[in-house]
Length: 439
Image (cartoon, rainbow, N blue to C red; front, side, top):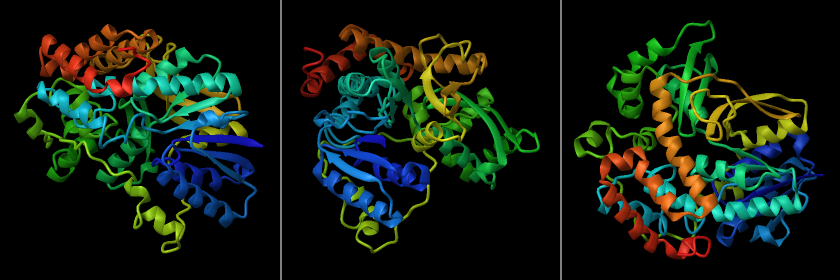
């Protein structure tokens, strides 16, 4: 019997991914273990998943664990990780510290989960748990697949690949799926009306080819859409990049602005791309909105709404389906660069098209990116690689230097200011960094 383990099952991916698993008849004869440390999330997601099983009258076995260390990993074929380590992902502590302390030093972040000071500290507190999961898999299910949704994706996926060589590690995101759908909506088309090739690094991958099914480039129409205020206001940073670099990037404006030196460091530049200054409260509710009494999922659970069994466009279950059947899928995944992108170093984490089938994952050769796009990716990827090295070596100086070379951070503060910010946040985040960092 196939065994799938969801660590962080109460997150936004848990119930959705379970519905996706059940949407494939070939995957229903499975054991699914739902793991979450928060009982106010684990209990409703378990009840929801069992209701889906009942709907299909399937042989699926659903079990739970509050801690993956309770034997959940034994014999697993696939482990999906989608958790926040130390506190809620985007509210409360320690996230608020990682957003608010940098702002004291003139370093503004919109999301703080991928790069910059916030991204580095999120990686520093999250990587030890992921490495422990990887080591547990090496002992209890060697050769299994770890499918990681946890941010910062590139830092953590590279770290896991190097720290846990006896398992298979993939990093997943949905920026490509959202990206093509955003383009299609602006051009009043279906996303199925396009052929495209996307590559780069996670959260900054580029539509290197974007064309209609008849072979015509869609870029002229996309550029024309940017002349319309309504479209521009949806994606101002992407349209600015398209105007000056000739290529569309996958990520939202709020995310993308953090990866570049152009926008976040100056008030007028932020306002020019419709971005403000984000403040985060240190207070946070125990239960996420997705599991509160009147949430959509709870209304499906208690019968006020019908079950939504529509398969999502997430890749995790499609990967499992491909490897367990004779189906073949093509998707963008985060993997270690081994010549796929010629002008990014081998050993960096890159996001490239891959073919997935019963034989595993085959990344596609992309070739060199256009030099300006490669340069923008290098700014992110150099920082991410140095942060990953810092984690593997438990080297705080390298972690600080990762912040120092981050493009947006470097455009916002002096080296001394960045180091002072790092040191202040190091002390504030100490409860979530010990004992791994021994500070």
